[in-house]
Length: 479
Image 1 (cartoon, rainbow, N blue to C red):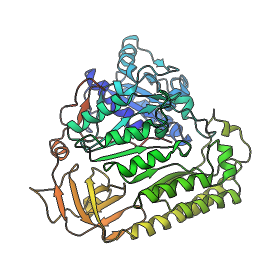
Image 2 (image 1 turned 90 degrees about the vertical axis):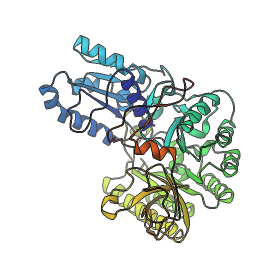
Image 3 (image 1 turned 30 degrees about the vertical axis):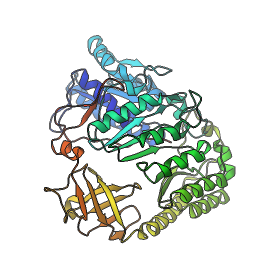
Image 4 (image 1 turned 180 degrees about the horizontal axis):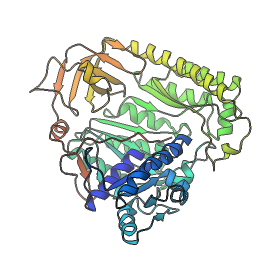
């Protein structure tokens, strides 16, 4: 969700006349879009701002803006600790950034604007899309849950849902410009419809996406087990372009800890959902989030988590050591396990999950896969002369781009079919020849250095701007 917010900020700034700086040019403006889920985000932000102080002193006209969840949380504290920051804005007023920058420039003092409720739905703002082939589409913002470890509801606010027609309009606009894959975003994506009173709205939305010609892949993140209903499983299984992939946070396998977390399900309920998903989609890849070392967690509780992981057989898991966040109920709880205990448990969990991931990936050796060729997914691609792509189930596959190629080289955004030759815990290798290669409009746009820029939902189809410089973005959170 933070990555998509950053696309909105880029679109706003371009509309205001800003041009993205190349790597060899000192920028006039730096914008930090922050996360606040874990404490490390605080440390990284303030450390980076400290390193920027000499640059600001050397060029006082350079502006620094800090937005997002950490800005919503810390507010004026950011300017107090780093008085060379020019603008601080929150999660509810992304659209104010250009105005705040101009005001700070005119007044020669910091502007801090933090709203308590959503000013405008982010999808009404322009967006400079980072990918020619895959797009984020928000269906809701905010969260109505009260998980004791999570600070997101207090920073993102109550859930606000978009109308289905608006969502589908944005999806259609992206597809009309060659985008092949969309990911539907929500803090609890399958709670969609709560605001307009339709508990089956998410399943209906998935089916409607299946009717959009040219949309080849639909993903979503992240659902909550509490709201996961059978109609959603049926919609996933019966809609051909909905990918056989599910990311559903577990957080803990201990029912006692789940209760302390205020997660409104228990381990058997969670495992029952997974069984239904696999019954409907036997090849589905299921991934999860798990927290180790939550306050009060005993060795027995941790063993319960290991047991659920063994039974669930996740394709992969994002594992985290509990991070205390001021302002959450868990921050006031007693019984935080010692750091060395948490670390040892964390390492055991990672080892177990890696073993399971490797076993599951090994079962895919010899299988033909369809890949949407990706940009920047393989850190060693240059030295191995491979490219990377995502299979329909979301697995990362590094492949050798030789064989049955159409009209030259494979580009990001193209579709290839190949055969898995080797497995590792976190990826697959396909070193055989390409079985089939389909050039796409998305690949054409990538080759020309173009990225879609949407003007906002319902305001027309995306247009393409000037060739982009190489971009970097860090994955944000959606829990």
